[in-house]
Length: 71
View 1 (cartoon, helix red, strand yellow):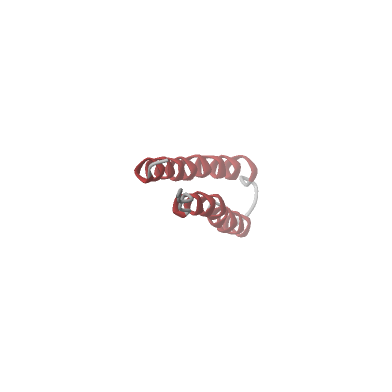
View 2 (tube, helix red, strand yellow; view 1 turned 120 degrees about the vertical axis):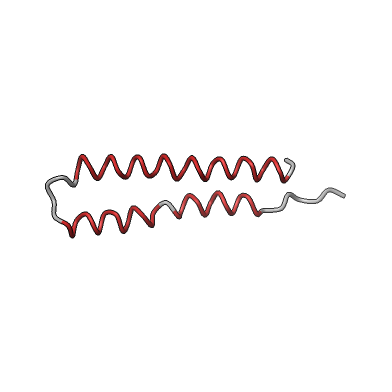
């Protein structure tokens, strides 16, 4: 796969990940945390704000892996 195509796909995947993850986390917060206090909101958004990094790291790792050289 050409490196430019790989970077384009990776960029699109990262943007899609952030948008979809933010929508899901917000929907969970609105439906599940409405009756809880500020501490629960803080803890939820702290962990959900850090959790998206794991799939993002996998995408970035895929982006930087060089294809095996033939020859």
